[in-house]
Amino acid sequence: SGRASSTPVNKSIWTTALTAFKSSNNAKALISKIEAEKNWRANYMKYVNDFVVLQAGASEEECLESCRLGLEKLNSAMTWSVNGEVKSSAKEAMSSSALEKFVTKTIVNSGSKADKFTLKAPLGSDLESLSGESLKAQGEAWATYGCIEPSASAALSSIASEGGVSKLVSNKIFVLLGATSSLGPFKSLSKLGASIACIARKGKKMEKLIKDSEESGATLLLPTREGVAGADLLADAPALAEWILSLPKGDEQIVLGCYAYLDGEKHVRASVAMDLIAEKVCSQRKGSALAYLVSPATSHAATEEAVLDVSTRYMNTPAWHGVFRAGFGTFSKNTFYNADKTNIKIFNGLSNFQGPNYALAKTSQQWRAMLAKAEGAVVSANHAPAARTESMVGYATIAAALEGMQSFPPLVAFDPDTASDMMAAILLWDLTSSTSAALPSNKDTHPTLLLVQNACHGGMWRCAYDMETVNTPSFLFGRFTPSYTPSGSLAK
Image (cartoon, rainbow, N blue to C red; front, top):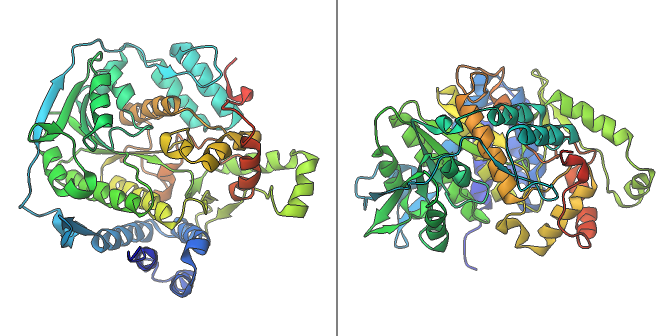
């Protein structure tokens, strides 16, 4: 195609982040191995996982320094272009004054505001939507099955018990980067009558988002140029940061949600744009909050309870799985890694299908989450499950694997609306509960543990098997399986 490979930059970001571990011989050895690797696309997973294990075993200071160095390298490596002409590094562009500014269009909808939080019932449920006791029961069913953690169920139960739930969004402006994202919280927030600043590319999806809000009590704040609502994160990040900072400055808290997703290396660029916006907004508007949907398909900290559950499930797997394990290398046990000194358990959810750009983009979001909390910001960063989004089911192989993986409990594929509502409820709990790990006042024993509470991993933490070794069986089973939800994960 004539385009430069992203591999050298990708590798250099990991090696730069590793320099934070100054006294670690393992870090020095890992740098050498990464630099010498000839087939990064095929082999990146072991290096990225080793990095996360080192990070989790490091001191708080070195862990955060690795996040800072990695982000600085990433943000400096990307360039900002205007009409195809490179103007500066992306980071330098954020301080540019020569910007075509956005004008705010405000839409105040006059519909009702929900008194109770409602969640779209999962596929296979006898109900259309869940609230109150039915929502509590479904949260407990998911946790018992193993596709979300007990802490997530408790958060859902707390939100289900709230009366006058719209008060949870008062005095806040939810700024959604990637407002049209299938798993983003727009629908839930609009039903509650929230003030929502919507950032997404102009076009049919943006128009539908505006249309869908008309019966709600939500107030929409839209960035416009020449009267047209919409913005491009990749091209307009500097101007968007200035626009966000221009939003009402009363006692409203900015909640900046980073939800944009693009395929391939564009996802890295979108993550850089969101990160630079987040960095600028948090530094200039104190008290702002950040929100992320963490991907379980990364390496990250998990719970000791999940490790024990995997061992129990593995001991009770069908005998015929053992035959395939011996003959074809499938059905290998789900493995956790133990970080030196801290004994933090690291789950390796990396998938070779996703590729190194995805791993870098999603891990860099974890870096910003850890750094921002350490610097005093509220940070909601919760694992979101695999879901039947357009970007997933648009590929026949992935669509089949999503359904087929449910043959291996407690893996569950969620419908997008169900997952979106669930993650929105947990976001609200994070922002309003005094016991939330999102609050900087609730200090973790290690920065990497920020990502543990309220994990909705879709069963990946607790499945008996390493996901990479059941990909082929999942695809084969899914080819002959219509969309469904495992009955054991549904509330009775």
